Length: 159
Image (cartoon, rainbow, N blue to C red; front, top):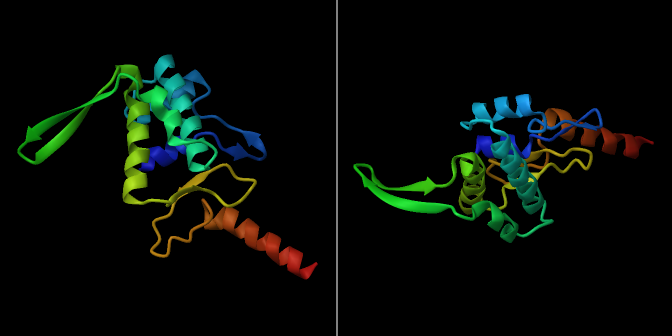
């Protein structure tokens, strides 16, 4: 789930300017390798596509059907091991990491429905996974976005 959040948050706004960890080939290769990929240009292109599609889905701007092209040619094969049933994903090597991110999103939606969401700060483009018992987290970071929102509300009240 942490890798999924890393992917969703790989294109933040920093001082009002978009940064893309997957945009530069060298930086993208490093990002992919840190997350178990190879960092090829084909892999980075699929990771960007997966990220952008997943962001739209999490924001409610797109349907999960939009993930279909990323899953073409992907197969899961069951294997019985001493630990029980295990599913192995078979996909072209350059697509493996993007497919794993899509599967991580699906598992998150199944295990923690509605808890993966965009930050409530309209000036922030990050996402959060709410692990709180009350399921009421709104900001990617209480120290940054939450504090800004509280300061904004205080300013409006006292003005």
